[in-house]
Image 1: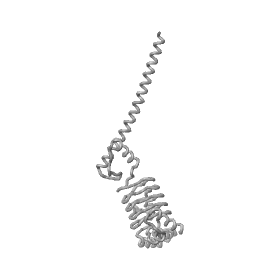
Image 2: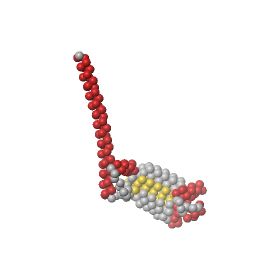
Image 3: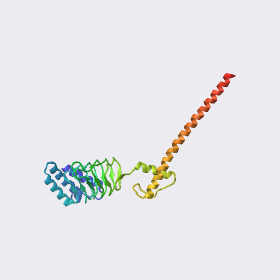
Image 4: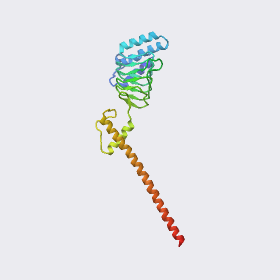
Length: 249
């Protein structure tokens, strides 16, 4: 219990530059209070004291503004920053070293019993107001943008943004930047997460230009190969003709 508390306080110093003293964190950080109360209510829940677990959870919600079902599983060094409005469902699983900001919901999409809430693997960061819904998995070190609505699995080290959330294709973005530089074009103030139709059209043109470059490069390589083959054939024919001429003489 005390080891968990020590880790909870230490992790605040790492992730919140506003933190100043241990006493300040222990007395004024609702995310820390919510985790302390959850560990107690979760112990009650695991030992079949369901009503007491729910009562303890309800008191924690009233004191902190953070609602964590006593059945939820939360790992070590989890940081809930600000925390107001955070809701974590019964079958949610939060791995070690995760960070949740205010307004985050780890909710369900069905009334059926069983696993119906998300699983967050190690190191996940979920931005303010994001909704992660259903029995999905958010991969290790993934990031969910503020106010995103996530209803599908997110792979490791990926970034998901938007409603519904989509994965930012960082490699494709790098290719677009490279193509834009080659043709002397700069898409100023245009981000990967824009839904503007003009932005989409520009991205489509850049992707098409990149595809054409690859095709042209491939054709050039084939032409060079054909020229080499033709040159070798001509040399061979000339050598054969010269040899036949010597034999006739």
